[in-house]
Image (tube, rainbow, N blue to C red; front, side, top):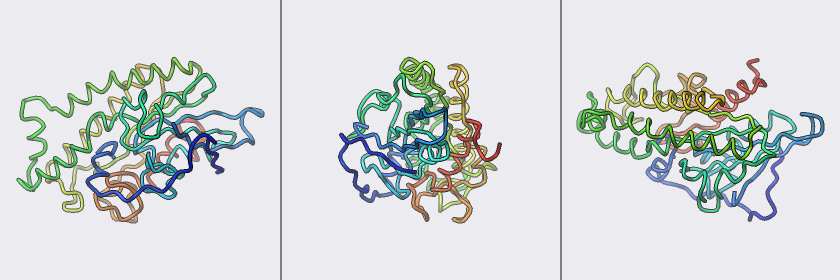
Length: 306
């Protein structure tokens, strides 16, 4: 894949090393002005390229995964938008994804990254949107649950904390995030009425069977199923919101099941809080990004599975 950089955008530098706490606090489920683009000019619909805009947070941008092409946004040239664009010939990629992004960054700058929605216009043919994890606040949730685990390693102190009022605050926050996702999708449609729009869900972070792996992932035993179910609620909300707004949903949880952060290094596609492969803590590694790319390609009808 050949990368083309907007001449108005200064050259990027590799991102400085982040501490685990800093990476987790800015993550998507836990962690343009510049718009690096990947261009392919052969194949496709006649001589016309397909303009693909990727919107999203750190699960889209791919922090730490080589090669990092935007230090401000911790963006990799091997994130799933780059892989999708490389597979789909005659595709021009405008990758606006940025680590730490919330739905607010769709309309406002994030450091040197302009408002992400500014990249969507009437020339846009395809848009992927992977956002909402930081709105829910999983960076602080992971930190909170890790800290509370010391109180009762065999129990569910994190769940007790978030349900102490009698209402599950995480479930409530997910519900409150749905209108924000709707607002983003409506804005995409207004800017590019003909674009094909895909909402991309989040991959399997924790064991689907509810088991744990303390201390690699430092949660209390009964908080693993609680946090697993919380992620599933987030994905269910994204799926429902996509349907209500007449856009497609890409399931990345199913294709990444059993490759969560508790699995051995050779089998996992999501890194734990102390990564063994180049990736941010609690984020996809290169294999995870590739799996998400394949899920997107399958939805588009060009995946190897079809």
